[in-house]
Amino acid sequence: MTPMIESFVMHFGEMGSRWGFNRTVGQMYALLVVSDEALSANEIAEALSISRGNVSMGLKELQSWRLVQQFHKPGDRKDYFQSLGSIWDMAQKVLEERRKREVDPTLSLIRDILLDSPANESEEYAQQRLTEIHDLLENVTKWSDELQRMSPDKLSTLMKLGSGVGKVLDIKDKLMNQK
Amino acid sequence: MTPMIESFVMHFGEMGSRWGFNRTVGQMYALLVVSDEALSANEIAEALSISRGNVSMGLKELQSWRLVQQFHKPGDRKDYFQSLGSIWDMAQKVLEERRKREVDPTLSLIRDILLDSPANESEEYAQQRLTEIHDLLENVTKWSDELQRMSPDKLSTLMKLGSGVGKVLDIKDKLMNQK
DNA sequence: TATAATTTTCAGAAATTACTGAAACTTTAG
DNA sequence: CTAAAGTTTCAGTAATTTCTGAAAATTATA
Image (cartoon, rainbow over all chains, first blue to last red; front, side):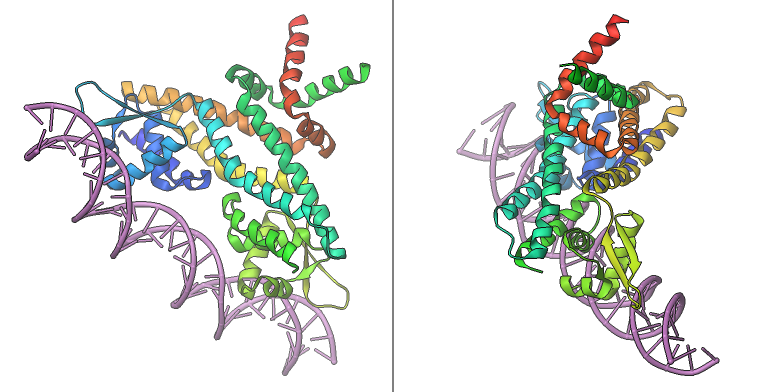
């Protein structure tokens, strides 16, 4: 690893914990994203100075996120790994995975809670707030589904829209009102 | 705490770690969101069976996120706390805070790296990938800024748009092409 | 100003999470 | 079938994060 690559890999490792995977998994992914050719598990372990066992577990996790792909070189017995898809694919995967971990369980608990009728005043208030949270999380889920389904180029249009969102909403409002 | 409220508070605590704050901070916030009236630090500590010191630190953090507000009752020396703003405000705060923690540092590191010219083939490849990540993160930042600035009712329109986004984009495309 | 009420700080304990490395397992080649 | 090459597992250890509680600091009252 050149110093340039190393600085990125190490940084991504530190960030990793904030993005939902641990330091070494973050480093491994960064390394694979940035490297020109596929790497074997041993090469990864060596480049990052971490244990072979840890690499094995990390690769398993990255594969379960479908961020990393395993394949074989003919005449070589080792497994090789490379990062999978474009950066946009990665962003979609991370979004999806985080929704599953961070949103879905809460949504389902709140649904259960709202099935019971409130026992007193303060539970009634609580249920009101929970209903708000429920609606918000449902919208987040709907959006996230929509983004999953969207083709990369449409996604890209949407992304680049940026500060144009407001205007587009105005346009939409006008069109709706005409009907 | 009634069992209903307790189950939500405890769940939110577990989730907390995934949302960027620790278990007790999550519990404290959930309790305040769901409770009808403001609570003193001691009441919080007692309800959650955690130490007074921990509550003090947690409230400080929640205040720094501007999710919780402190105030005084006349003739009472204690500080009282209540959750601040609507659920939408909370979502905005969490979004903003996470962007600061998760996106901004990476963006700034990548910018630095891209200032250096690549030393060889493989660094050139690496820089290409970093450029992609850079563009993605910039778009994320732009969007997040936009969402910060957006009024709650516009935000709500956007949210509820849900699966309509695709259609709206089509409309926008047509309008743009007419020009 | 003294004292009582309350909050904050922070060193160390407890809990949690991540990592290592040796042993067990799997796969392929001869 | 056996040996060699490679991978995975997991118990134990290390590192990190969170929590406690007693002491220090702050604030209000008399």
